[in-house]
Image (cartoon, rainbow, N blue to C red; front, side, top):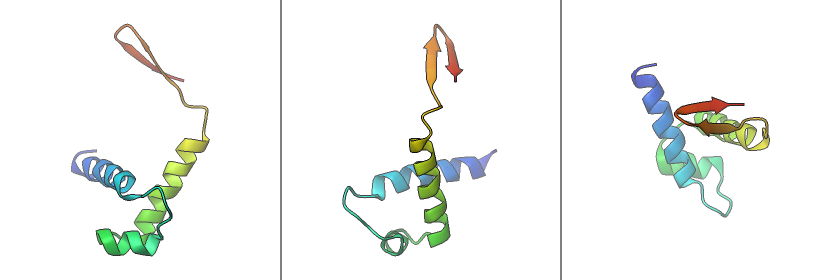
Length: 68
């Protein structure tokens, strides 16, 4: 993925840090960060999908990491 993957990973981590426990609008996040509102919505939807998908599990067996 190169540099694009690293930028997206950083953006996702930054967004997780920015989102407060109390409500904040996508517009407020966009103004605070300078990111496009569509990008913010895309990642929030991704976070919600991951949180609601209880199917994914990671198990460490010795030196192997298994994803179920």
